[in-house]
Length: 441
Image 1 (cartoon, rainbow, N blue to C red):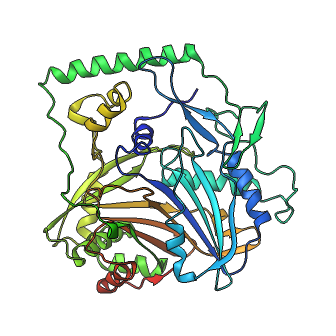
Image 2 (cartoon, helix red, strand yellow; image 1 turned 180 degrees about the vertical axis):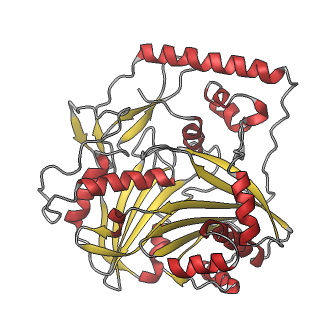
Image 3 (cartoon, rainbow, N blue to C red; image 1 turned 180 degrees about the horizontal axis):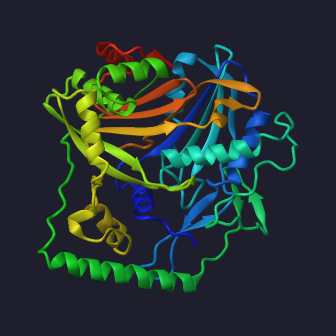
């Protein structure tokens, strides 16, 4: 049985109110109507693919939770009543509720028509199931699996290719039932002997690592990230999506002596300063993709840099390059596995605010060509980002940026949690002060 990583469990705890709730979201926009029959096929392929799993608890203290294959999923949510195109992101922001990677479906596929004749399609996923790049891999595998089928035929037989994950074999479903919320498949009992083996391994790592850390003195108490910012009704995230031709973006970066990535970091930092952020230094959190093969997992590490007002894309290029060699470590020098053997609330306290800084700059990278079309429908925009369903407390992170490249464009998704940024319009207006040719999505 495949086990959850430390990062998986950090995101799992956010679903229980311990930390900032995070759902990943992929968005597709077309100029024409996408028929529901096609999306039903995409839905079935996703359900049978790498997102089709849930968390199960271990039966032995100290053993890690595991992943179990399941076809449990929310049905396709398709609205044939058009909404204003200008309200596209307002609709998208509402699509992350109710996700639960353990006791309920952890992902949702939804779509709505737009009053300009187009369609927007949303795939939301609990961050416990995958990180941004992992979600891309899961969608790529699902869409590639239906390329050869008749995408207009709702009765098309063989939707999706067999899941190639060697560690998560698809279990047959002896009894399946549909209720009003989800498709539920009978689960398979966990392997108790495997739990004992995993528990022995975990405790061995924790005890040896803790003894080694204590020989160097008691670990410092973890610092908190209390921002002192009260949550208010108007603190809901402000969202914007912009895009830019790759030639223009790369030319601007090269003129400044930077790269596409360092220009991205510079943009997010200066957007925050231009919004009124008072300090002369900004701490930036930078996720790093650590996977060695395509798979839907939280296969990432975090690093951070300090940005000053004197920095430019050239200096940020060097800062980021050095930071990628020095990843964030476990709390107080203790082995990170300790977060998986102690109670959840203790683990949350020990790792509270892990990875959170003033801004988040998540470079998801190039997206595969399979994501540029939905059946016969060409996608005029594809974006990836994170949203925060059920947010109750403002985190330290005030502005998050998500950059991806698809075809001949970069897409920049912005999510602001800074009350100084009063509206989505104010967020997009800030970009004009930077002199970069970004267009509204």
